[in-house]
Image: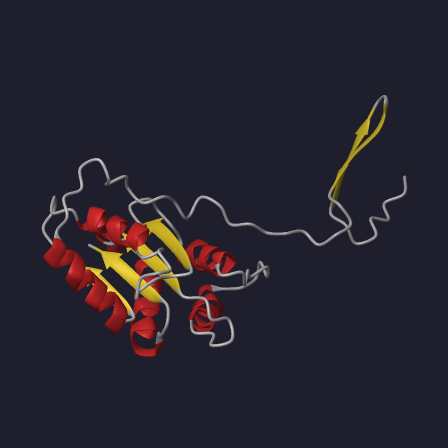
Length: 192
């Protein structure tokens, strides 16, 4: 049996009726991160304009790199964030974003997968499977700030309170602190 795979990943099964080979193509394998980003909640059916809060959110997103919506449960933090997520895609507005990513931390999301997903959505995927949280944090801040890329991204981290109790929260906190200090152009919106 010839096992020269010419650098490809192969899985060869010896079968009584002959050899079955399941192999990938010769080209580089694209690593896609799925199951992280999602759609914001559908707020349109019950949304009532809250002009004062909407104006405050707009002002904060234009001035700060990280904006946090804090309110009691049931206020509609996620709905307000979803309104902003939809509203700020309009390129005719003074405040708009080229790309938007919604991540619910109510579902368990490792920082590794989150960072890889955001970078993938920016068009700068990290294909190194050995990349760790520290290198991903550096790359994420670098690429979100890339003056040559000129992509303005809105990253929404919804239901942060669910993630604070998990050990992974330290990396999210490090990202938010670093982005607060160095971030420009793109914005992070946090609900808790």
